[in-house]
Image: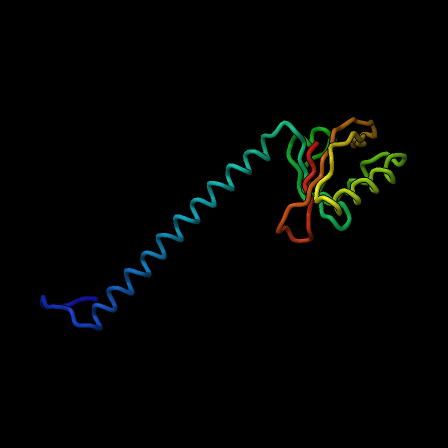
Length: 150
């Protein structure tokens, strides 16, 4: 609002000034919230990326790997693009698959997480690697996704 001569603002001008101040306050608050979210996401991303434990996001519908950290990729001998979409069932020895699937399905349905359990994964080269695993549902994720910690 520009006035060429100094004067006492009328009611409409005061309302305009107050509305502008409210909008500026909202914009500042939103910026601060966005910055806090980015900082928090950065911390959790760093935790995911630098963890020495293998971590992978799985889809709950078919167990396909959405993303995995470097420790998980190293353990199985894959690169990030090669592992995306691979199902955990494809990397589990056949003899363990049925028992493991029943255990996981039952515990996830009852508790939303599994107790830690021992399993074997098949590396890309076909060798077996032992792992301690725990899965849990991540609330609010599309498709009711789960984390795996190894």
